[in-house]
Image (tube, rainbow over all chains, first blue to last red; front, side, top):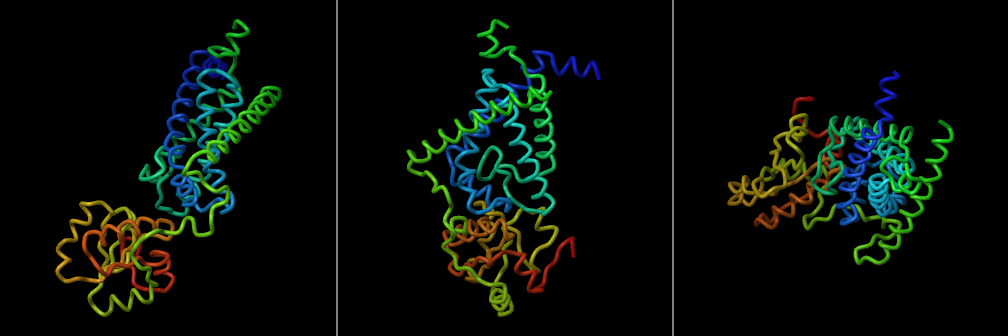
Length: 154
Length: 157
């Protein structure tokens, strides 16, 4: 347990997690920002969200992904970004699980809003792993390699 | 642990507010911005083909000159599909594979699942572009067909 804690709080390990999460979320946001209508359709296909909320989610979520991705990489509001990334991943995990259970044959809408991955267990595993990574950053993410850290001289 | 989460939550709220502001401003500024609430028919399948109910599709099929084309992925087609249907995903290769049908000028009923009717709409439009004249999309997909107790086949049967 102590070894795990040592690894999780290692500043290089945390930097690695931040870079992976940041790059994935920035990349995931680009096509969605480019095609908000397509992303709204991808959300609709999950048949989980109330009709009135679909467009709002399609407008805001890609920018939230982009902002969190940038902030977690440059090291500003690292824990807040990681918390939001974890929350978004939790939403994806629930949505994909429900869709898999219901046997929906839809595009996941993860990176490409049209013609991307179809839903599979592998996507769920990927999101669960990233969820744990974001949790580690929330708990252990400190000022190392961050703008705030540089300001404080750490 | 509590102060860590509480600090993170405060930062998260700030980021969320910032993301909302940026997203809404950009949405208003861009030409293809979305209305905040989608119109009732915003996510309906868009196709130039006519929609057909399962009962009417069955009548066409029984009359003898209609084919069902399943636009879903082959894996789902294998599990179950409308009896006698062909599986053609909406790609150019898929459309080309139906060239043999053209001389008979058949009625073609494209379908997918209720959630993926868009795929059936895309396939139907490609068939119309390829020169087929009597192309339909099955309303509400294979689920509506099953609800009517019409014939289904596949591994799950």
